Image 1 (spheres, rainbow, N blue to C red):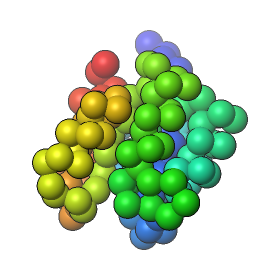
Image 2 (cartoon, helix red, strand yellow; image 1 turned 180 degrees about the vertical axis):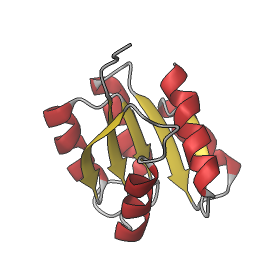
Image 3 (cartoon, one colour; image 1 turned 90 degrees about the horizontal axis):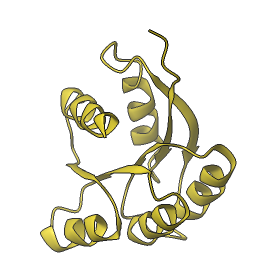
Image 4 (tube, rainbow, N blue to C red; image 1 turned 90 degrees about the vertical axis):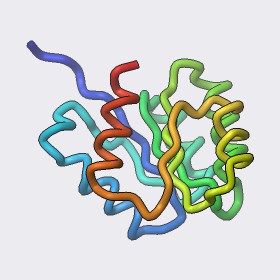
Length: 127
């Protein structure tokens, strides 16, 4: 059964985290992911999203130029069906709730385990 790949955009101001998430998309449990962009901030993310129309986004909340909360709102208004996983070290509940209210569909705390990220992505890919 051939299913078209799910386009993934990775947004984080840490190159280490962007590369780690990108590497984890090679996990055999995630056979259908295609990375369409790596962005270091919300403005880059919006530009890449307009070009590639990702179905799935991992996004940090604390970034320069445009933070993740604002970017989540912009992405959801431009692409209502987008699945967004917030990956953030911010552990306060109000920030997570704000991101969810803006349209994020999942939240993963940093530091995260490889398995936790793969499972969170699988959960969003079901939607």
